[in-house]
Length: 238
Image (cartoon, rainbow, N blue to C red; front, top):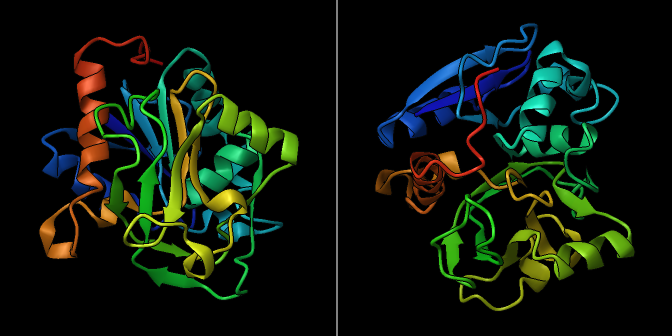
């Protein structure tokens, strides 16, 4: 299958994502921010970085890139869209996902291992991973604190749209060990259809044992399986 990886000025995790895709045995194609063609991608990844220098606020300018019109249309047709770190911020700015990502509670940039508890299986990204299983996937961000109104948070919980939650290594509540102070320890969410995922941790940095964990590779393989099964999430070419 083909993973399209968006490239904005300031993106820096595009090649890491491409490496993970190729390790999984699939094809990575780069999608330039000024273009509209998604090049037949089965899944579009918005990787980490500082798109357009994160001017105004993280993801605010990238939301208006010509490529994003195609990404939004692709998502609306059921295409798989995966925002990682800065990509999550862009998806929130583009209103594909609710809420916002703000400065870490510590006001410090954090680059460290984190542990995520899988909270839902109702998405192709997490299907097949046991509910409440703990994955080790690192974070690397300064603005990763997820915030939303209480009504939005309640809706995410009720509809099983919280994909991942920060926890301690043993799976207990994160407490003071949270890397960013996200509300309700939320590390990733999906849209109502389950085909759009935003997450702050970097699964591409946990794609092989040499990196300390290969838990992130499970997400890449899940996406490939969903497409190979001909799930409704695999959208037509752009």
